Image 1 (tube, rainbow, N blue to C red):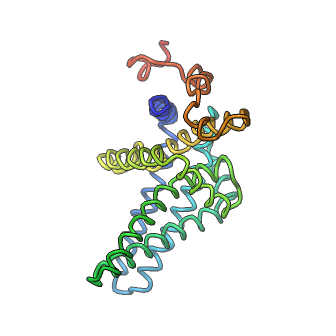
Image 2 (image 1 turned 90 degrees about the horizontal axis):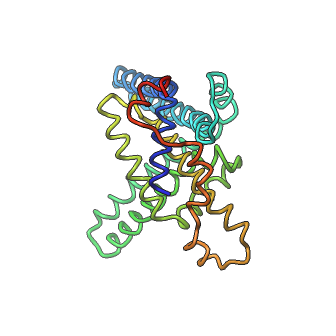
Image 3 (image 1 turned 135 degrees about the vertical axis):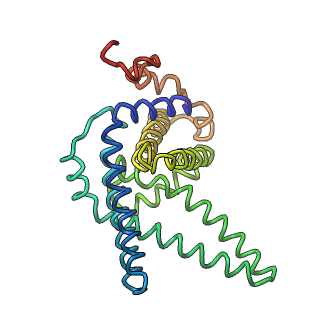
Length: 261
């Protein structure tokens, strides 16, 4: 399943390269512009912090909308600029809340963990270790929020809850997706996060989540099986057969000269 996911994410990204570049330009320009403006008014601490918070929220709203259109690509559909604007209007509140949750989680863990670690006692050490692992679980879980909100659950709190359900049921795959995202973003830094960038990683998350949901559809259709037994016998080849046929395979030349094939 992982091998096909990587293939599909690459093909989807390549086929929608221009849209991904444009979305990444929007994300990068807003982020870089906000940071530059905050630095320009850094003598006014409150104003500078306010600008950074506003930019962070704006990025959350944009990424929520980006996930909405990337979910269409993951489902073998296309999108246009109006679809993106519609996604912004329809998900801006959840994008704002998503940004606040991510920012709040970051602040809580970066403040509390060092504090308890500096206590120099066994109690402080234990608490710091506990907070560290809670942070790890939270990060690995919250990475599923965007695709869950875009494809499955429109209720914000239920979407957050399902993030943790997906993680605890798929810890290995969640860990893989985290490192996949980190590696892709690091590679993207070479060309200023333009390709594949944030839009490309959000597309990959939607691809991964969509494919993973086949497991739950199959389990639901086989209620007689013990859940633990069912998890170990997921017929991935059968479940992915239709998607594999649609995605197909390509030669190196076909990526650059598709009209010849």
